[in-house]
Image (cartoon, rainbow, N blue to C red; front, side, top):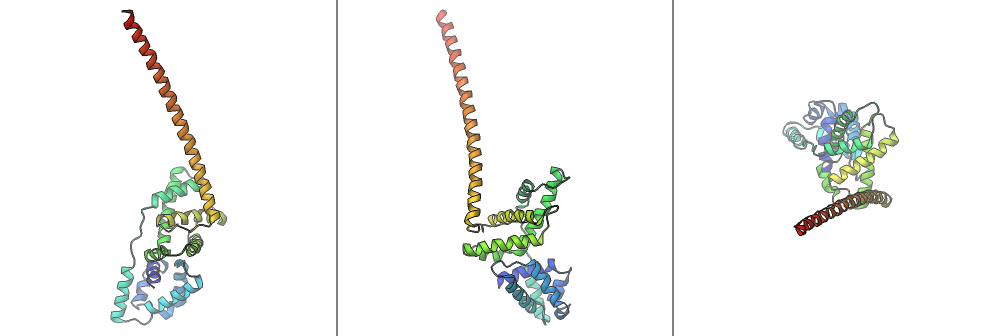
Length: 253
């Protein structure tokens, strides 16, 4: 319930026209006048990945009734305080890292590298905002104790929901699905929710990619070592030759 309520109160002010969320909380606007539209808008932006969309819609509808319908006076004020308390500021610590990852994956036509980086920084902020709206902190706490099977299902749901919520310019739906798979994996790793989320086939691809990276690093390190040894060997021979010359000069005296 805490997870659903937090998601509800974080998403509400963003999803609805400006001010409408708090007007509904305090009954300045009647719930019965807008109920279907509000439920539809909230359900579109909220993601509770451990339940289906249909069950989520029922939960959101129930929360709307509890939060918006028939509250007056003290109850309305309490609801307003709850709403404000649960609208936490979003964490943007990973904006630069995510932007760099996106810039490495995606090429935007007719844009310089600097323009792309600026675009991807804005896109990464939008992605972080969307992710933390869909999966607020209480939900992340629950997911840390969720089974790998449920986490895998949550991951797939998040990929779909993030893809629905955000558009990457000039890219097809198939390309976007590939990008959002990487984006969700990045975010799950950032929040410590990545363990067991990938299927064995996906894990195999990751391991193969890591092996390729290690092989390149090994080859580079080997070349550096070989070059260093050659330089040391040449220096040693030069010093030995100089030593022999000096010894010869001393002997001749």
